Image (cartoon, rainbow, N blue to C red; front, side, top):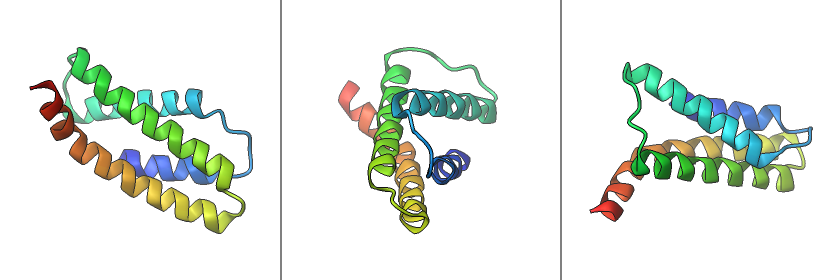
Length: 105
């Protein structure tokens, strides 16, 4: 939930500046993975599942940043995109483990 809020805030903060979606998406994913592991009080098991999970999250974040950079013409538009991106991120994090689990079995 915190990461979804941070993504929305990141989009609003990035509204009137040059966005580098791949690098900013990677930094966001690293920060989110660190916070997720910190909240679970557990070291991550870095394997193919972990890489697929965080790679998918990185692609989603980069796509959201590209869309916000391309179509964010005013503050209201960027605010709506930030809300939609936060909801989408939350839903992705919620359902991605079951989707990846069905692909690996």
